[in-house]
Image 1: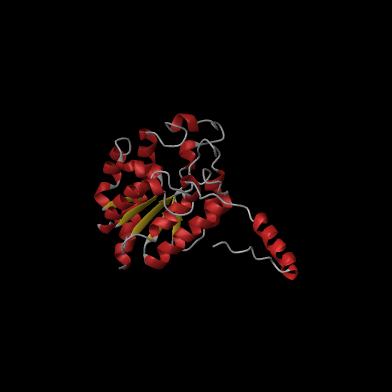
Image 2: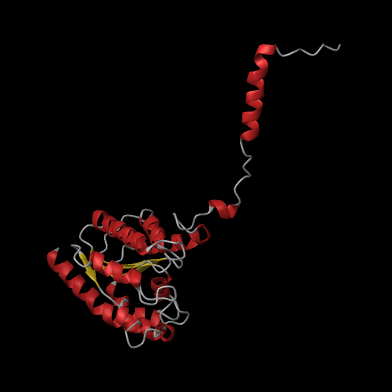
Length: 245
């Protein structure tokens, strides 16, 4: 049975017209594509969760010495960096808790997912990937400060050795690293171990291309030079930590 169409009372017509126009003005938003929702510069790198699990297992061993950072540090576990690690760090109960590709914000996220540990010395080298995330040197410094605060609040008594960000293709004069050095030079509980002179000096500003194999990562020879400088500092900090226990 057909029903006659009901007419809208005249007094409601203006209201109905306004509702129609308002609905038409709201843009239709398509669902976000995967690349739109993955934010590797604000949390973990979602395509490297297996690596985060691997470094968590390292942390579970509760090493006395923890290396935090990105691929420059993580490569100490590779064929190229392993000789320097074995020669200078292996006998120090050291663990590499670093993930290739991490920016300073990724490292900060990782720290909050680690098991409870009590390292005596923490080596921090981060910031090389921050330019990929369009993070300014000031933001890198702020994130580094948050990492330091986390370590001091949660790994009480740990001594922090900060290696300012190394020169690289996008920052050949290590502007980011120089900023970190200035900002944290007098921070209690933090010691600066600069490596800048190994990669850059006024007479050889393009020496970076000879010192790293891809304009980012130190060669095996430079890994050795860095370890030769850092190793004795770590040993001294461990002795002082044991004396104060």
